[in-house]
Length: 195
Image (cartoon, rainbow, N blue to C red):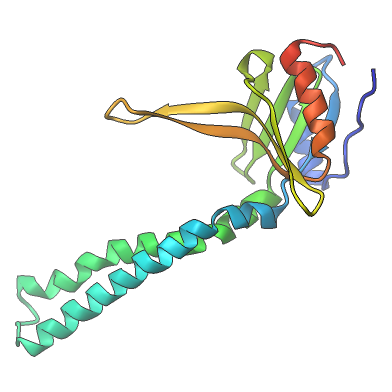
């Protein structure tokens, strides 16, 4: 069987991968998301955040100028009325800055495949590790992008809220340079084929 060697990673990311490998397990493939690709996925949220935050600024400004026109006492309860828009402004600001967050997150994320599982390691000093074995994998779907990178989705993460509504989020490797190699190895894990 052909095995694909690990790609170049920074020393910190390589140590993060090595520390997760169990005895008798071998790294067959590693990759990283393209940070700019992750950042682009947040652009719709950024545009909505501009609208959301802009409306909050308009609210705060309108409430503050309305108070001054109506001679509301600055020490009364109405003095806090403009502050009701502040949480909405902060939420909008967070949405606008989400591409920057995802860009930085992408630089601290590494993907790895062994003969047993697919691994997603993210974070800096506080590391999050997700492992997906063959039993966790569903339909494998690859997307090739024009710049030669691509995505391979192989699982779904289900979460439920307080109303018992369940939502699913696709899980996979996003914006990786050698996506076809990753797809081949993930198929082997899912189908229980030894590499």
